Image 1: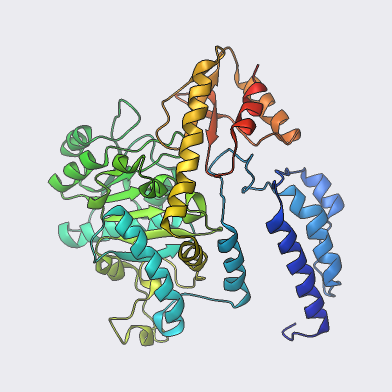
Image 2 (image 1 turned 135 degrees about the vertical axis):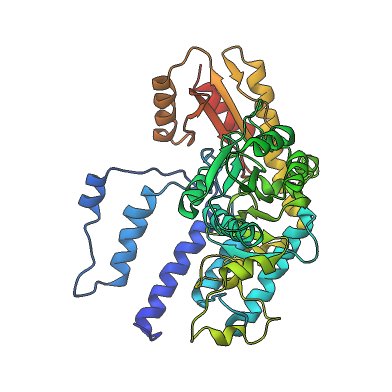
Length: 446
């Protein structure tokens, strides 16, 4: 199993042929999920005491399993939050996997960590965070939010004493934050909003009237459902006045920091104590990759550093940067390297242009919707999400429309809920999604 013999060489050629063909697909097909019964019939479990020919197992993946996985990098994948990794990042992700590159500690992986830290510095500069800022790449926004809120809670407990704390949020705060608070035994302080954005004055009033001490506030820089950015400057002022930890969840929208047309919407993010952005979303990296940054990483290190007899050697030199000290994990792959490679190859300007392309098609789509009598915008798009309704439709109409789009491979567009109403939603990330694709999807609403 561990020798590169003739069989392994043949398998390498087979897999490299597949990856070459997959990278070259233009357009990338949507594909679609199939039923459990069909998969059990066509892909019975091949795992047993005896092995199988590698070629036959790969054929099973290529012909049966892969087509039953939606292609999140398709230009027609416009639901949830898509992905559009660059070819350079995908290819370098193969290097990371093939070489088993990990990034646990400086002693083991200084080269990988050095490169990852260059990307983290790039992101910190984009947000206006100080030179002291630093952090780590984790699997996604859920892991990042959990790790950051653990630091916020423990920092408050050291300064203000034990007890049960609250975290200020809005109704648009991502669901992973609620899960993180439950795990950390933090209670939500839901701040009322008038425009689905968190603002400084209502935050100030809510914290002042709270029945329990509040240790942090979570601001959103690009809500998942509508792409809205909170009043970060106002939130920052209120956070300072109440000595709150300010965490900014920019998992989806934080990439807008690189887009000149919307950069001003993020004013105030420079005051964040922690900030997350997921490069596997709008920064064109492969899954799974989320960047977590701290204004003062020493506070995170005090919370997340793990101690054991076999680990103490990792902390002999306090100047060495150990990613395992900045989130709840220990083992981790060097998941920031594909982004590092792609950024270094293409440069910031290319990334800015690709992000602006998604913003531009969102604006053009909004204009098109305004011009069609039977369509109506639900909220003015702020980033690259467009939420709209088809006048006269019920929930069943939206579901039938969505299912027909996928069945016919026209698009993957699932409905969402807005104030309890079923509506439609586009999430644009891929710079190659065209107006023709959007118009074809909207035409199905007539």
